[in-house]
Image 1 (cartoon, rainbow, N blue to C red):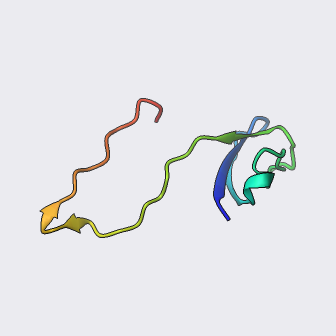
Image 2 (image 1 turned 45 degrees about the vertical axis):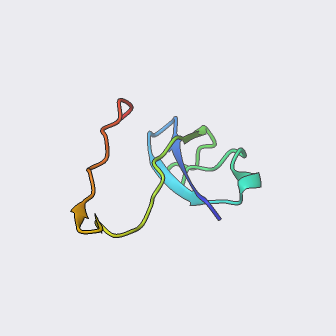
Length: 67
């Protein structure tokens, strides 16, 4: 199941939740304050792997204008 990130509009708490894709658009309860005023936020994709490819250093990620 994919991991989704949410943010609470009432208390500002960010939280992650593992949900089925069919549940991702449903309102999620904030674990901090219990509010249902939450929204799904765009997050980076986690990619695992080695830090070096064929002996050459991998370039660092490009900074995002959204962070």
